[in-house]
Length: 220
Image (spheres, one colour):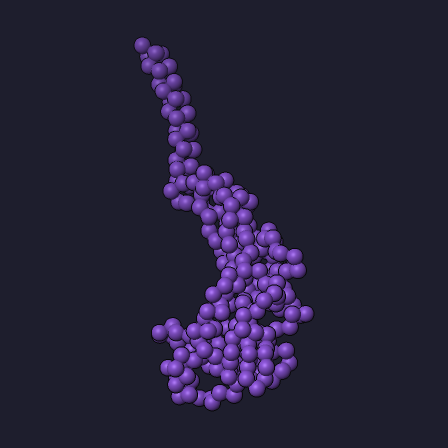
C-alpha cells in the first residue's frame, strides 16, 4: 500500500510562545511516539498534513513521516488538539505503527440498504453508534464499515455483531452494542392505538344498538 509522505522537522523548541509562532507560520507542532521508542517532538507543515489526510481513511491515513535527522517513520495521526474557542487544530499526536502488528483504530459506520420494512410501518431509523473500534493491520485499515438497513425490522435492530468486517479485521467494540434501532413515532403509535380503540368501540356500539332496538321493540 502506498503511503503519503509528509516532511517534518525534529526537536522543536517547547513552550506555548514557540507553538504560537509556529502556527502563525502555518506550521503545526506535534509529537511522534509508540513502538517502545522515545517520543520525538516535531513540526510539520499544516497544509501538507491536511492534504495528506484528504482520503477516505481520514485520520486513519497511513503516513510516511520524513523526519530530518531521523529518517522516515510510518505513522497515523492518533489525535489532534483544537483551540477550545476557535476550533483550529493546534497540535497533532503521531503514533508509530508496524505493518506486521495489529493496531486498534476507530472506523466510521456507513448506513446502506433499504429500511422500508420499518418506514412502511410508520417507524423511523435511529443510528446509535457512528464509529466502531477495529483491530487490523495498519496497511489494511478500512475507510468505513457498512450497516445494512435491509436487516432492520420493527422487532429487530442492528448490533455490532451484525456488521461485516473485511478480511483480517475484527471488532474491538463489544458485539452486543446497538448500531441502529427501529423507533415507532408517537404519531404512528397513537394512530395504531386509535385504530384498535375504534374497532373495539364499533363492536360495543353495535352491541348497544342491538340491545336498544330489542328493548324498544319489547316496550312497543
